[in-house]
Length: 254
Figure (cartoon, rainbow, N blue to C red):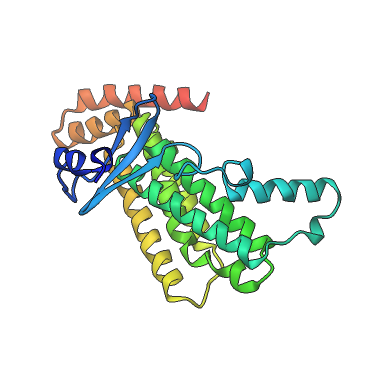
């Protein structure tokens, strides 16, 4: 056996732990890579571009290759003739799975920005296939997973805003995603209905948690102090608080 190909030293240095089985490291050439420790080995994903590092047709992905041909067809006035055959659809399906494997781990590692990027990429593939696949079965193949991908995308986008302290923007992201999922056309598919309900529940819980953790504004703090002052019959303090609250509200109006 070639010692250089034996993974035992690496695996021994990183024992399998299902609670801590993903990490981002710096490769020998300085680029970041995502590694996943499995019970029997190691998986490695590129952090940018296609997760397996391949460049089909000399482009970042098969999706980008076919989108390029779509743009050419549009430019030539031949969009109506553009379609994806079953083999092309299958390549995009399989490629999307690679991005799914990566964004699940990125979400686990709280890499919100790259999770948003990869989920948005897969949603773009969903739309592309739904519109241009030749066969109806290929058009519908991924739709049962749309609620789930929308949920992960919105959850990561909301957490990006939370990390910036933009709680109102985070709430807006979750509410928009909830409305989007609620508006999806129903599909006679158990997976779709399960994922829709699970995603709506998860996003509503996230919205509730965001509101619970959102720091109080100065106005909200003063209103809370006013209620306490009234409850404890500190009427002079209550009057001062009312004046300050009135000033702040007037500033907001102006």
